[in-house]
Length: 255
Image 1 (tube, rainbow, N blue to C red):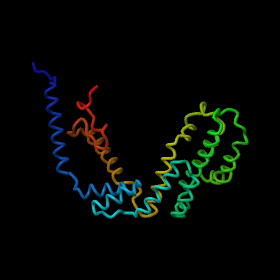
Image 2: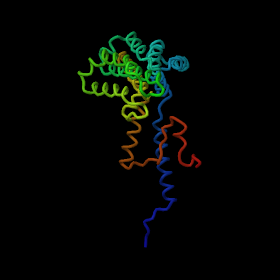
Image 3: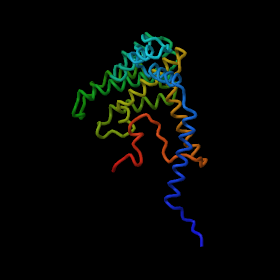
């Protein structure tokens, strides 16, 4: 009587064969050094690393798609947003290209909303107890919202909802604030807005809005999902190779 049980040795052999075939295919499709250098340079320029881009250009004889000055310009804007200095960032954006915010009403609204959030954050920070904050303390936030955001809210229901949620930050005590409102005070919102601004500036200058390597990583992840769903002959784990944790898998990890 035959048995349908698959032995561990058979499973191991199949896995090793799949891994070997895959590694061979990867080696055959290995990109050239010039292609890799181009991806690195593209990343340094898009993500705003002027010093590294300048040095890498000297080492590889590659010409950056943007000047070091324009990269530093974007870095300065990003730094201001990360620090919560939104008004300064808006001025820098207008200095770089006055049409960017004129042509992108959503981005302009997001910046103004973030500026309102930073005003409210400052008010809350000046009242550590967060209890019984005098109403007049919120006057700067109310005035800013009235002058800068209220006129824009009726043009889009999403703007109106965003403004209402932001104004709600003045009602709740931080410890009792619903999650959807608390997220507005998360500093990661600064990072998101800064990323959107960086993309907008790059697009306005006719450059790629996002580093090519990010697009390739997403495409690679999508391709792996499709291949596994199609039962393709793949290793159990395919590291991307972007960090140490990605390489520490399976037998390499001691638990």
